[in-house]
Image (tube, rainbow, N blue to C red):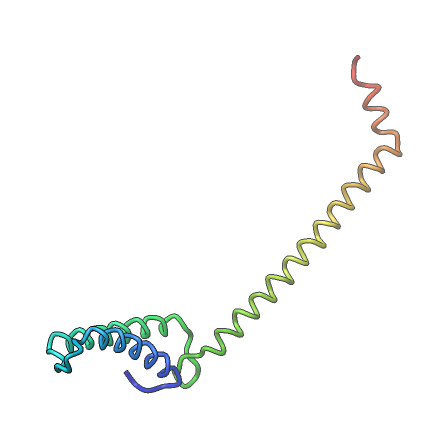
Length: 122
């Protein structure tokens, strides 16, 4: 894996695994066995695969590097858009309710409701 700006993430992850595996070494100063070294190598490769998979979820910039900042700004922009849309929905709902109330009041004041009630047999 190439060194990039996100290499510290890889180093932190591999250091954590290496510390955990290092703690498993017997305290009598024996060397790491081939099996233990293979386990460390497998853990590091698994971390690399996971980081590559995580990086694949992000868009690339014009230099083909992972664009974390652009991804974050995209989420902020979507949040702003969702807020604006919800404000439009609220204002539209208020207008529709106002129109309905005005229509009902208009019907009542014109006597339409009175005529309908007179036409209904009792």
